[in-house]
Amino acid sequence: MRLTIRNFSAWILASLLILLGFVRRAKRKAMHGRFMLSVYFHKPSKREFEACVKWLKKNGFTFISTSDLENIIQHELELPKGAILLTVDDGWQTNEANIVEVVNKYHVPVTIFISSEPVEEGAYWWSYVTKAQQLPLQAPSKHALKQLQNEARLSIVRDLRAKITLPREAMTVEQVKRITASGYVTVGGHTHTHPILINCEDEVVYEELRISKQKLESWTGAKVNSFAYPNGNYGSREIKALQDLEYRLAFSSDPLYITREKLKDRYEIPRFGLLEGASMAENICRMVGVWQTVLHKLRLPSSRKPTEKDRQNQVQSGETPPLLSNVESPLVTPG
Ligand SMILES: [Zn+2]
Picture 1 (cartoon, rainbow, N blue to C red):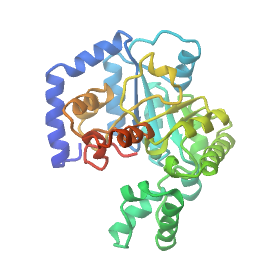
Picture 2 (cartoon, rainbow, N blue to C red; picture 1 turned 90 degrees about the horizontal axis):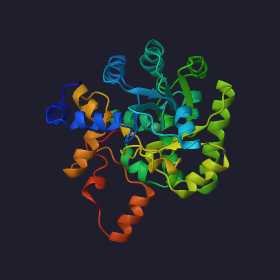
Picture 3 (tube, rainbow, N blue to C red; picture 1 turned 90 degrees about the vertical axis):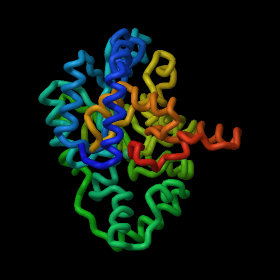
């Protein structure tokens, strides 16, 4: 655990939740097949990721892959008991050592959703923003940029890129090829440049999904069937584009359990976000969905991000629910 006041207070809350039996009850429901769990990481340390895998194994969970999930949906199978799906977003360079080596060691499947442009160029757009703020150069916050129309965001990022050089942080093409050789890794799409899709023009959405699929398939030699929405933002237009491009599954960042009902929307599979640097107690609560559910009940900010539906509801209701308004809070899982 990275020692911060935030992590320490979250650790106390998580320990309390474990002590009060919240985790035990969620585990029991999962083991009865009431729901499945899916979680997402970004760039955990090896120790963090391995601790999660070991905890899940010790507690009797069954690891399923995205193709297992597709099979369950396709054939309307019973939900397997105690099933969990591990996913990772973005395609960070450290994923090979910290995640792929661990899944190979423990023989568990993982799906890594990769943005293809950072693989070619080296860095993610928001890292230029972070660096600019450290230098300091004039730059809006990451959060502010995520609200802008895509063209406006791109023009600011382009300016920053011209002034800043960053070391590589995304996987190389060679790494993408190498990790695919592990029978335990599935590569999924995460757009080409990692834009906020709902801020893009129609053609841009389509091209982002098409280019990344085509590049990933050419690097891996395997079909790219699954997708994760960058920052968890999507709407019906994005789902339609995914269908047209023959993606077969898509994952949101909505922190919900995968129930039979939820599987009816195969382009809106929910996931619980892990928080890197947080305590193991907190991440245990996160993996079994207790953290997000309890925070929601307490009306504290969790990792939930507003979707297009939420925004429509907000406009209709004219109010901003406290849970959804606080997307920059320290309890948030980054996108
Ligand atoms: Zn991402």
